[in-house]
Image (cartoon, rainbow, N blue to C red; front, side, top):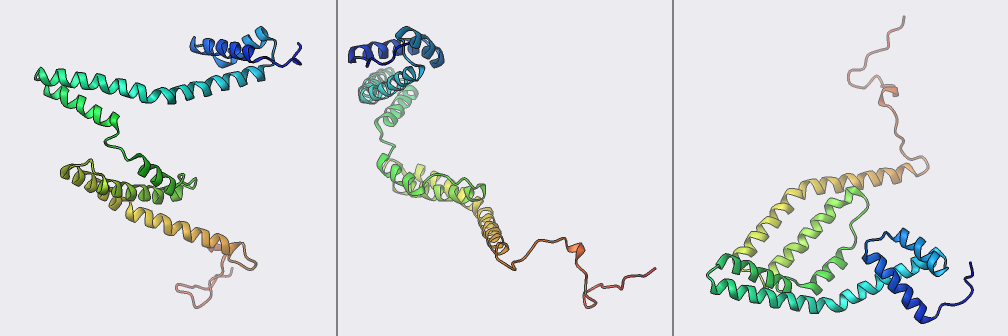
Amino acid sequence: MSRERKSSRLEVEQRLDAVEEMLSGGMPSGQVCKTLATRFDVDTRQVRRYISDVYARREQERALDAPHRREALLRKIQYFYVRCLSGGKLAAAAKALELELRLSGAFEATEQRQQIVADLGMPPDDPREVLLYARKVLARQLYEAMTSPHLDLSARQRIVADIVFKLGATQSRSEIDDSIRRLEDSVQARRLLAGGPKIVDARTIDRPPTARGWRPTETK
């Protein structure tokens, strides 16, 4: 197969459209690679690049359309809220109002939460450090609950009390785990030194006569 000629922009767009059509139809990406590689006389790696471009284009279009879709949903919810309220369906109206508040971002502090996540960093790979990381997350959530302008007094007290309970429940365990971890690290570091301590079976150590419960070895 000849792959020397560079594809024109029109050909690339046609191939991307073909990839989009097959993926939208539910065809697996592996089958798309084989089918289009034969149809367009290109390498399967090139088709995989086309598939990546299609996914990237989808994400870009989704990001551009997101505000419009959210606005359309908000208008529908507002209409539903008015109909429910006028019809005396207060429970359904309350649910619609709650959904509207969540979609509008009234309960979210996006920039603040992104900063908190950035400060916390990724969870540790060492399982011994995960509990300490979780306590840091709870502490940041406590700060969010205390400073959020969208919580009334009862909701704030309930959330704060729940977080404080979780912090108290994990305190002793996390401190013990942290102490054990630091002790293990210290022992491991000392064992690597020349003349450092070694782990031996205590039953192989001869007990001196001054040891408690020492008895002379019986000779036969």
